[in-house]
Image: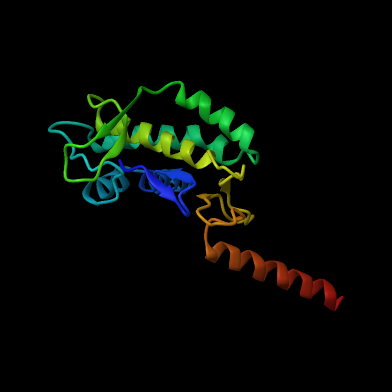
Length: 193
């Protein structure tokens, strides 16, 4: 699990785990967080941990159950609308995990931080890393809330704002465009009356 600096070096970011967290919450909200999702994750290079799955550890069912629980737990963090409220909600979740911080220097990667207990299974290690990644997002030196739910009324997705300005309101450009086009059309109808 790599601990990276965001933008100009002022915000710590565990981006791979953050992206996985957003993907898990959105997949859960779409009803797509299932065994196929877990199998695809395990077969991909998207894992925020460069650890390999240990023999006999964390089958897809365990991963699905853990990630669904994580998605359910993090929903109120993304919907908080306020950095202090989001932090309070996340702190309650962080208090439930076994976080053991260590610097890893003995592998092919540059020195990096690990946040999980090495004897935990893959599913729990992912959960811990995802929670810590969202914590790093909330620690913004400008006080900007960088997590949220899409502003499109037709969308239930969440996002993490990686932009410099910290003013993201939509989960994607597609949602932003659809919302703006819809608003434009609505104004045009009112103007014609």
